[in-house]
Amino acid sequence: MINKESAAGRTVRITFLTGWLLVTVFPLYWITVTSFKSPGTIFSPTIAYWPQHFSLANYTGLFEQAQFGVYLTNSLVVATVAGGVATVISLLSAYVLARFEFRTKSALLMAALVTQMIPSFIALGPLYMLMTTLHLVDNRLGLILVYIAVCIPFCTVMLRGFFENVPDALEEAAMIDGCSRLGALFRVLLPVMQPGIIAAFIFNFVNCWNELFLSVTLMNSDSNKTVPTALNGFISSFNIDWGSMSAAAVLTIAPTMVLFAFASRYIVQGLTSGAVKG
Amino acid sequence: MNPTTTDAGPRQVAPPPAKTSTPAPPRSRRPVFTGRRGLSIAAFMAPAAVFVAIFVYYPMVAGGQMAFRNWNLNDLTDTSWVGLKNFREILADPVFYTVLDNTAVWVVGSIVPQFVIGFAIALWLRRRFRFRGLYQALIFFPWAISGFLIGILFRWMFNSEFGVVNDLLEKAHLIDTPIPWLADPKTAMTAVVIANIWYGVTFFTIMILAALQSIPDEIYEAGAIDGAGKVRTLFQITIPSIRGTLALTVLLRVIWIFNFPDIIFGMTGGGPSNETHIVTTWMISITQQGDYGKASALGLIVVAMLMVFSVFYLTATRERNGKAS
Image (cartoon, rainbow over all chains, first blue to last red; front, top):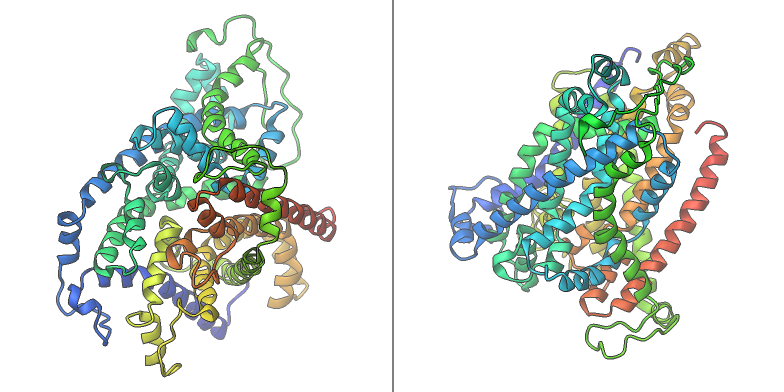
């Protein structure tokens, strides 16, 4: 595919790729190092690139002075339920979009592109009023319902890509063996797609876990706050307590990193299969 | 829905479709749900449609009509129709023009470096090397973090007194005195754009890498026989082959970055003195002041701008591409 690489070219390539890797990882390294410094050493004129002694004060402070455990629980519940339900609903719509031809399909895709152009904040005010009417403001169920809706469009596109990657012959063989169309879907197709489905769930989970503006709008009591909303509260004061902030940031990022490590390969597949083939 | 009854009734088996010459497996679209096919499709689409209609489309439409109303949370006694008053207010506001300039810098300043760096990484990632899988996983990490948190990370790194960026620059003897990055209007925009570049390169890498992998090897072999060098191969084989994907990726990213306030929100909140406000962060601050009517009008102005841009862009790239895409 590619002809031989000269020694100079190889040096340039490795230097560049290594450099970019360092640039990518450094901010994460930096916030982690900051979080383990004792509050006194964070604000010292000489900046240490490695903490002299590891201190957990920033972390214990989060759980003792702020209700960080509550925020984490809220985020976990909301992201798990919303991500799971959105994945199931998107599976249904993605299956139809991948396996059937019908007239409204291109219209749906156009609608998706136009929706991309609308800044979502236009909907925040009316959404708040709608949720007030439904008595779902400051309520985890309310946030879950909204998150499900927000996850569905993109998740559908991604899962459709996975369905398209599975040849029809598989289902047809099952149907010849006496499966119904739905039987073929549940017994043959879904098991084959399992990695993709898990990746889609993780993608939804991470998006809900990270979401800020909707939760700031809909959750106002301390016992219902999600993590990003709490972090937003940390910066609204003029002076940021960078010790607590860095520890909170690490606790927010760490779970998503772990999940992403498992799923990134499939997420990339799902993202690109639709886009490049289309 | 009872799965055992879906195939009741005589099933008409369509003749197998004619084999096409494409290497992809031909897809037989047999009308399996004969008679009730439409109903079944509707049933499968219904949950998604209901959710999106209630919680996404309805609020958007309701927000759209607020643009033509006097809708302010501080005074809800009069929510009458006011025609284009909100639009006139925005066009008469000098901040709007600052914000437009900033948005242009934000979009162009982010997209160009993202594209170049992303393209380079994608080209180099085509080679097999040890740890390539691990490398890809590592450079995709920024994706797992919310834009808002990325803003916070960079806010800390660009801190003028205790920030690591100034410290590194001083250690490298590039500066003598600390730069007040986020407090100085001249440097704040640079800082937020740097954060956005860091975040967005990955997207271009993924899309371009996927497109590159779909180029058949034969074309390169033909090029090699013709004695095409590296540069000629890039510009005469690689880029023309994936021009369609490149054009579409750039368009989607322009739209997306235009509407992406999260990093700025976490990093500067639009300050100092509106110097890092882009259209959407300004819209958030107007919403926070309770003036929903004005915020919605601004939202509709954004939609109009992006639509006009998209039409021009698609026309231009289609002419350039000829029949390619």
